[in-house]
Length: 204
Image (cartoon, rainbow, N blue to C red; front, side, top):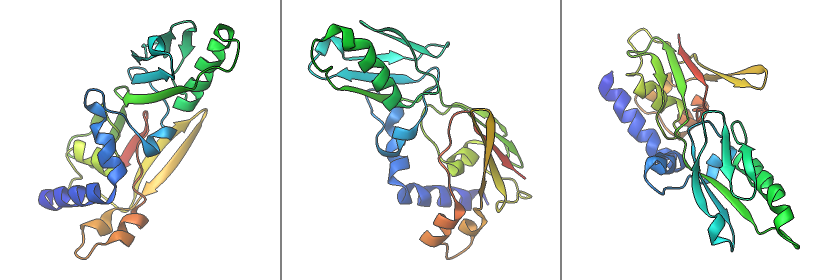
């Protein structure tokens, strides 16, 4: 079972290049691109901020435990829970008083999602809370939890995600991936989600 689990994990890493790219986020200076644009910022994340043509305003900042960042000429900005594009807009608005004309383009990227945290519960070998420092999908999350035990129901894995005051649920069906002859269609039907900070994965 352990050997099959490792093979499936490596197989999926090849099918999801965006996930493989996201893993480089923990490297110094690395940038997260593509699907990470919908990532909501967490306390502890490292952000890279550029104001085009303004070298003095280009810097890397860490989101403080209270969820804010400090930026020159703007002051404290609420970052936790926001999209990078929303932080760009907040900085642009804060800089308006400094320019007679149009504010230079502001770009915010997540250099390292160090504040990313999720939990895995149920029939896995090492349940717990994990802070990977990078983006992971649900299959990688189960691997970090030691993989499923022999009684796990892999056709009924549940992801619980808090969105505002609501709880959203996503069902993942990965049992077919462990059978001989699994192909791309099995991967698509599995609904392998990229996790967001605060997610709870339950393996019944």
